[in-house]
Image (cartoon, rainbow, N blue to C red; front, side, top):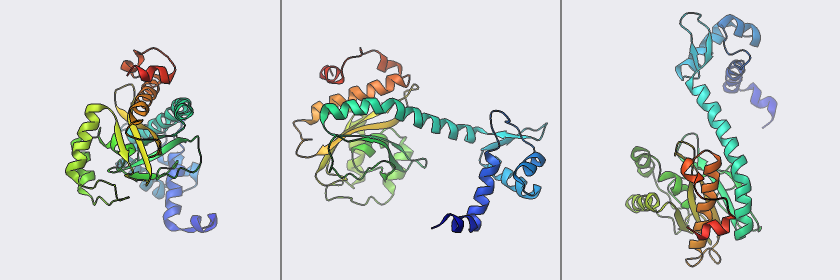
Amino acid sequence: MTKGIVADQPQVKILDKALRVLMLFTPEQPEWGVTSIARSVDMPKSTVHRILRVFEQHAFLTQDADTRRFRLGLAGIELGRRAQEGLELRRIALPVMEQISALTGETVLLQVLSPEGDQVVCIERVQQRSGLRLILEVGATAPLYAGCSSKVLLAYRTNDEIERVLRDELRPITPHTITDPSQIRAQLAEIRRDGFSVSFEETDGGVAGVSVPVREARDRVIAGLTISGPTTRVTASTIARFTGIALEGARRIAAELGHQPSRVAPHQPIEASAART
């Protein structure tokens, strides 16, 4: 589809207008009135007013009762915080992921929840060997109920959020995908108890992995760190070593994000630190 065709669609036109309005709110000029916005974006005041009311309804903008001028609301600020958090997370995690991948020879993934909270999204991937095909490529999404990289995030959601996921149709991705809600609940309880998740061929045939939670300064789980490889190398006999390495990697990322408990252990090579766990 060409750019011109997209721009001609009515739905895209109104979205373009709305975003042009929202982008006016900057640190240099945080407050705007309806007239000044209409003049800046060359739109009728009635159109601007409707756009502002929608943004206000969803808390992206708020209006001062005295000046009648608009400024960014809590939802707009939160959206910016999420974007900054995602960039910071990737910047901090990448060197650790590269070290883990070099140490293990396996693929290392960093995944977070989608903005809607109903899927997992891969935001970074480091791979030493070519040929390993995974459901989670960078930018790809996967269901929250299947595989260690998803379950390690689902496990730390609220009970209501977990049940909302489990109420939906749980379609098998491979013959090894667990789709029984009671079994998944039991697995999630184990993940919270043990601090890691392991899966064998749940989302990718011939592939196994271990995932651990990554915490931020307020102790909230914001990501999962995964070591994944073929079942010929990621086996019942090697999974303990990979788990220790993943846990140490997640600890280091969390420490850089300001997670205080993660600052206790000394800075050692990941292999040496993992051996102590």
